[in-house]
Length: 191
Image (cartoon, rainbow, N blue to C red):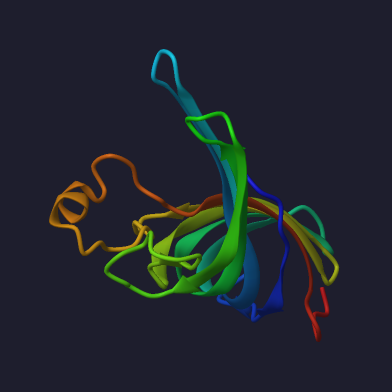
């Protein structure tokens, strides 16, 4: 897990007192931490990697609201999202099988390159689709919320090696998952 931020704009379309539709357009950071250790008996190999990249995310939330009074509402929401990866970086370090330390770093770029392990650039699939759901509190024009993002798309790249491509998604998958804490301000909100 990694820590990042998100920033953007929202539109709150009030359907009635209890329901709103809330499309958002956000820049958000995502990433991963990965550790690998393999013991071959008399030799061992270890590697640790951290990566961060930016996304443009478009969630559309259906918001259920329960007014506590004229100015405070409890909220729960659910809805789909689509996102596209921009770019990022990774850094790693480890110990090879001969016991020598090494470091690795490079760019993460969106794209479906056939071979993900040539050079210092790592590729991930650019598109991600999923759902998010959460709870919030609207006080006057401020919204305080926490939500969970559940990615449904495997964002690991495709491979030119037929064995690796056939095992893609079976050995492991890369899916975006994350918890977001948000504070929003609704301009023009009277209550």
